[in-house]
Structures are given as structure tokens and as C-alpha cells.
Image (tube, rainbow, N blue to C red; front, top):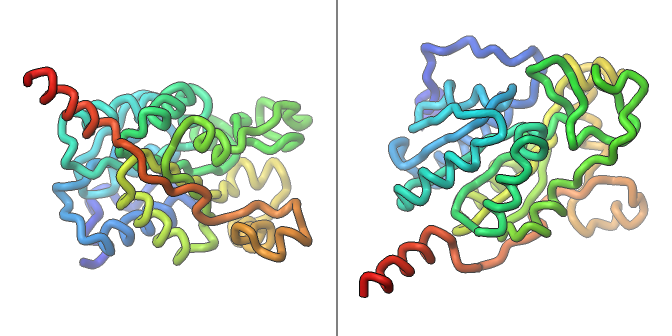
Length: 265
């Protein structure tokens, strides 16, 4: 099916800034869903608040646009009530790791079958460019004009430590890789977290003098490498991409259903 058939075209043109990476992520999420052969009425897309959270308005699936940081709580409710549905949660780095951080770690430890796509543009883009929990140390935002002295979360390590059973990272430059990873994450039965490094030329790029959207995407090409590559050994500062963890573990909604049946005996 053409990608446009998965969109609510009446809501276009979209409101993301020129050069924003989130449209690339939305397009590749759609392509992953199409590759998996999922029907539109089998998919639910849930978001909180932020630039990334405009996505449910644009995609023609069941969708929920919820409270800031609470997307995973709503998504868990959907999955528990209708476990046969595929539930995808696009989130921003602030939405997922700041106000929503508690929901993230508990969704991960429960291993409920959701796919959290965390669009990491290293800043709060919608509300004026404040630094986020994933802004690199020393980088600038409107609330850190001289550079933040907070250390950033490594969301991959956080998700692994919290108990997610599928953990991956990719970037908006690596589009074919992104489609494969998102499809693999959706197919996985358990809590899946995919971090996608996404450019924000309007705030993060401008405040940190990183150039245009193209320049920022090229920085993902040059500043990342595949997991375990020879390049990483030679340049340890490079950020690794790929699937870091994929394990089979009991899934929460299935375990709950089994528990209910057992208690009804």
C-alpha cells in the first residue's frame, strides 16, 4: 500500500519545522507497518505532548493524543484491554525520559508488548528549546545558555537496565536500517524501545551551531557506527547503532490473562 494511504491527508501540510527529522521517522514507521502486513485497524498509535506527539494526528490508525509523559500509561491500558492490537508509542526525549521516565522504566520491567519509539533530538523542541535529560553535557538550550552541566541519560542503557526485552538505536540518516529495526521491534513480543537520533535544526542545531538539517544528518553518518564494528574500537567516541538486546521473556498482558484464567479455575 502506498505510504500516503496510511496518512490522514486532511491534516496536511504538517506543522513540523523545515528539516525536522520526525517526518522521516513517521514515514519509516509506516513503511515498517506496511512490510509487516498489518491492517490499519490492528494498529494503535499513542503519544503524549511534544513535537513527536503530533504523529497520531497524521497517521490513519486508531490513535490517542494524551498527557505529557503519560503516553505509556495510556498505551498499557489499551494493550491490557485489547491485547490483540499492535500498540506503538512515538515519544520525545523529554516526554519519555523526564516527566515520563517513571512510566518508561515500569513499562520496561513489566515487559508489556508495546513499541516505544523515542525520537531523540536532544532538546524540548515544541516549548522553546529547553535542555532535556538527553541533551549532551555542555550543550546549550534556552534554559542552559552557557551549556548544561547535567549528564545525559543513555536511553539504551536505561531501557536495558529497566528490563526491556528489545532495545535498539538508529538515526534519521540510516533510513533503511531504521525500517528494519522498527519492523523487528513491532514484531517482538515484549517491551521494545527504539531510540532514533533525530535532527532539530530550529533549536538544538541553531543553539549549538551544528549547521543545517543536512549537516546534522551527516553528523549521524560520521558520528555513529554499527555495534561492535572495527571503527568503534579505533574511535571509542562514536555512538553505536543497531539492536543491543533481543530476548524472549514472559509478556505482561499474556501473563495477566493466564493468571485471571487460573484464578477463575
